[in-house]
Length: 183
Image: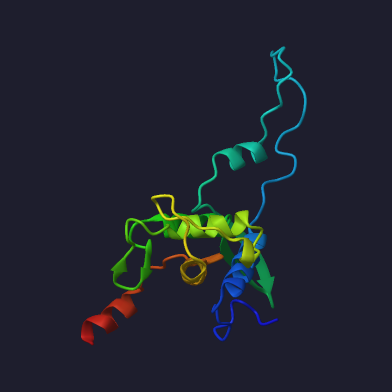
C-alpha cells in the first residue's frame, strides 16, 4: 500500500478517503488508560477518585496544546514541538468558516454537510466506504455519487490542514531584516 502522506497517493474514491482518514484517526494520541487513582479525596467521605495531573491535563486539554520532545543527535540537543492532539487541532481548523468550503473560492452551500460532519460519518461507518451515510441539512439522504465527492473532499482537506509537528515562529535576526530592507 502506498503511504497516504506521499504526494503521489491519490484520494480518488470513497475507499481511498476512508483509508486515509482511518490512518490519521488511528494516529491520534489517546488519553491515558488510568486518568486517576482510586481512593477517597483527603477529608472526603464520598469515595470519589483522587485528582491527578494526568486527569487534569486531559480534562483541560486544548487542541493547540504542544508537547516538547528533547533529542540529542551527534552531540546537538534539539527541541521538537509536537501537537498533543493533531487530529483534534485539524478538525477545529476545518470547523472554522474559512476552511468549511468544498472547493477553493466557493463557500459551502447551506444545505451541504460540513467537512467535520463528513469525517465523523466516515468514523461512524468504521471507515467502510459502503457504509458511509451522509445527509443534507434538511435531512434528505445524499446520493452515493455526491457522498463520494464529499468524502474525497473532506479527506483532502484533512490532509491539507493536518500537521503533527508544531513549527515555532522565530523572529528574524537584524541581519535578515537589513537584507530584506535593502532588497
